[in-house]
Length: 343
Image (cartoon, rainbow, N blue to C red; front, side, top):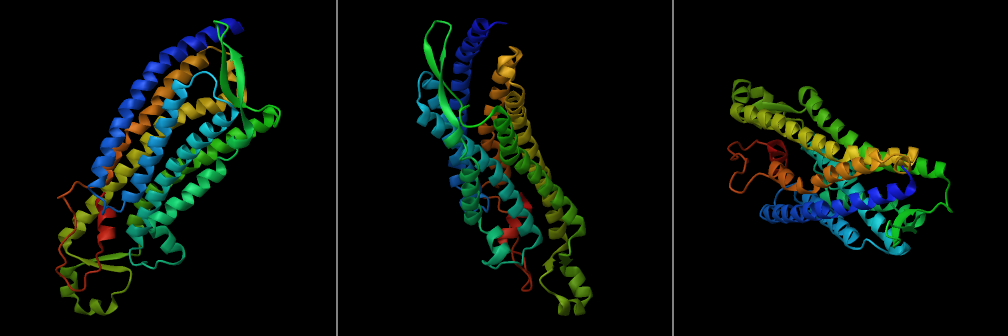
């Protein structure tokens, strides 16, 4: 396929994509708004600050996509830089904030008595600190787009000039951009997704090997001297409560693994294709790339509407609190640990 035919095919696919992307983005915005409405009713949830941050980043990304499809001609180098920087930073932030959410859940489940607001445990228990650190990390790691991106002028099949955001070949060599693309793919997608799955597996492992002892009231009554040895690794619950907690914990792990798997499935194909394109220049060598790019980008867009499902899975509906009444004066159960066990 010569350059003229390749350009015609690209323009045809782009015109078809316009309506698909527009409809998908508008539906996603409606579902994100619904998720936000539902979440505002549950502000006391320990997941609230994380999910609100993810929703805000999703809305920002969707608005960038809308701006991109409606401003198809010339943008200018500055707009190209800012557009890519904001969208990449939002994507990086979302992926790492999921990891922060699951990591905090791990520490609260298995170190419930570490309540200090200082030090490492204090940092891990503070959702606001984790969000701020993640935002700074995303901005820092994605700042490369403010330097290495420019607008390149191309001629369409109707001899009309259009502007396309591309890398600045005058600043860095092709090999340098390949290294940069590989590093950015690992930092933004591979590492957070892998670590998120690892943290959920760690929850399963820690459940079987934790030094945190859960004792029933019946055992306490049968062994009165045990009360003398209660420390920060002991939690007192009824036998029924222990069974319910174990069941909720396994359900929570399955849900978190499911969400992590869905996120990987929706993100990995498109960004794997983009990474291969950076390394092997697929877009200039085969027309199959154009079709794959359109199909996988649509799959990628589906992740934004999934936040509605995630909020329903992570946050219990109002009126269905899982907190147990505190019938024992020696009980060490906290509401924070209760919710993380519930979901």
